[in-house]
Length: 416
Image (cartoon, rainbow, N blue to C red; front, top):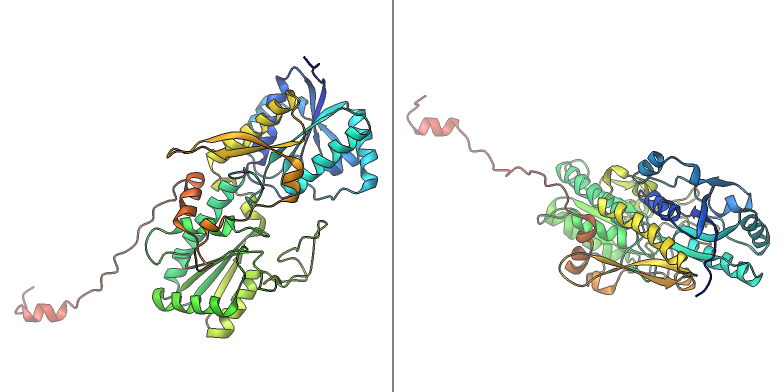
């Protein structure tokens, strides 16, 4: 039997936050406290930049009450980072790991984060330093490879669905003032979040009427025709778009030329525009209508008042599962959640190599996208409904047109 690797653990958060990412952090800390292999648990201050700058936090010193409250606290408590590792970074990183006797490395994030863990652990291995690295999935975009869904997506999806449901009622009732609305979600190359807006529908005519997904190329003529048809049918138009929708030649509809450190287009960044703004211009120029666009940006990542309990529970469980895997010596993997077959929703844990997550993305399945390319299928609604849960039921007037009363009285002989 192989000897148990003993040492301290280091955990970090990276990339955009979610309202449940701290639940995963607490899951790691809680599980590590009862580990026979792990001594103290340290946290990276501002992701891998904290390791580079020798700025670690002693999470073992935190009070139990603080950690309990942190499970339902939004955003990234340790501070996040989007630092792209360069070759000169590895030597100082390893020096910090050795200084604090870090033998277990956990990071909570998306594919860029999984790439960071993979590269750090591989470098440590090349120098003979023994260390185990396990990734904990996180992203509101829901585009990590090898998972049914990611912690953070259910709550962000609920945020979108509620926003479109409630904003759609406003748009319906204000249609004599604003003939259309455009709601933009985050999501660079995957349409999981804009698709979630379909959960807002209860009755025929409910918002949204048009859903634009990054998985399908945007055609202006087809889009404007769909807008016109929806307006003629409903008296107003509700449009939802992913921030990363592109024209057929691959040019972003947002037309932004600003990129981040990973060479990803910064949609809506300073110096550019947003996809919602461009769609607003197209509709106004074509039809002369007044309307509005809504770009909520990071609110989808931090609105804990709209979070899903299931999401908190799964995020916490993923953190604990990562420690269990590490204790067994399972290295170079990310925790995955797989949906069990059957009518009742249940997930099972699995793993996927970090290097696979780092180089692959997970766009929406074709079976979830309607033939028009501007809506979703019932299969997607069933998939997402299990994660988001029911939305509030609102009342609607019957809109029964009143009948004159004066003339009726006269016909009855003027009785009072």
